[in-house]
Image (cartoon, rainbow, N blue to C red; front, side, top):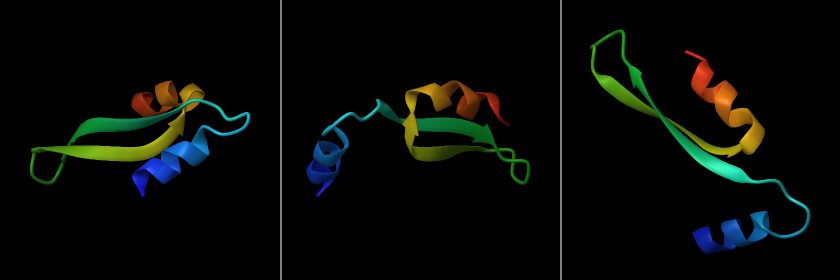
Length: 52
């Protein structure tokens, strides 16, 4: 099923998409947690990593 989703994103005049994973420190436990944003456009990646 994942191949079908990727194939539909590449058809036509689409933009580049990227899966982003950010490591965030939890205030509650102090451990690091991975925050995942599934699909972002290439222009939104810097803004995603800049936010806290």
